Image (tube, rainbow, N blue to C red):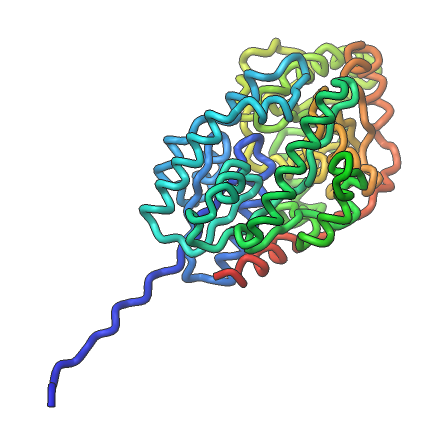
Amino acid sequence: MSTRTWTRAPARPLRALYLSSPIGLGHARRDLAIAQELKLLRPDLQIDWLTQHPVTRMLEDAGELVHPGSAWLASESAHIESESGEHDLHVFGAIRDMDEILVNNFMVFNDVVEQTPYDLVIGDESWDVDYFLHENPELKHFSFAWLTDFVGWLPMPDLGEREALLTADYNAEMLEQRARHRRIRDRQVFVGNPEDVVDESFGPGLPNIREWTTTNYDFAGYVTGFDPPTPGEVARSRREMGYGTDDILCVVAVGGSAVGEPLLRRVLDAVPLARARLPELRFLIVTGPRIDPATFPSVEGVELRGYVPDLYLRIAAADVAVVQAGLTTTMELTAARVPFLYVPLRHHFEQSFHVHHRLQNYRAGRRVDYDDASDPEWLADAILKQIGCEVTSLPVESGGAGRVAAMLEELL
């Protein structure tokens, strides 16, 4: 009889690759919260991140593992900024014109997953990976979860019939891909609730967006990425920022790209007029990681800051805010019950339709057209009218990150 004994090889640790959209910082905050919840459920799980600046900065500050392949990704944010005008971004057109970037970034992704056996890939609006996996299903050898906070390309009315035809064509291609290769997305998660999906058509002869999404997606509720700050935390944040109890604070923020610079300059023009009527009004203008605050003039009563890692605390400490119509920032304001003005980028269908629809559901914020904000007197008056007004918005649910993590954990 043989006396040879066998030693079982140690089990390979579980690994996940997280793809977080680099266009702004909103995705990063919620993705980080989801990843942290997922690691609580599976302490044996290692999560690597494949993404770009400015998301990498937030992740590194949080001690997360950024895959070295991230350095080979072509910049989506730089492309989006190059396509923008004065508070104007035809985002659908910009995405249509970034094929080289999407192909490059998918090839980087494919090299990464070929070299490392990942059990799970999580794509938060990683359009390149989702599209090319559907076109090349033989390349999928991992569980794949798809996250998004909007469904459906929508045409801007002033861009005419061609725009409507193109968006419908893109929607039809997505629907056909999903019908043909349903195994590509092992889980589809909508960050929100069914009523947050627009009640519109994908296009002539195509399904209703809300009905199709409700049938095909799991819903997690909104993911804020943080616990609502307590009154004590808000008071401490104000003290740390140097604001007294008599100060009235207006926070101005435009997200993680450089597209919002013109709006910041318009607010600066309105500051002296607003402070002439309300001297205790002070402004904290957050330019984000891709706009240098040193390029703006010094204005009395204004503090200019670049990247702020705990922006949600600054927002919660505000008496009023002026922001772009980015979903994350507007929902943080909604959760904090702070009155705010939001100014959608012109020709940005997501901000104009999807985000606006959701904010209407929550009865939050006042929409402002950029053309109206061109008059400093008008903008100063609009800011002052928001101060002290009754906030009647609906509460934002909590626990969304944990709900998404539980859905992802089932794929491991």
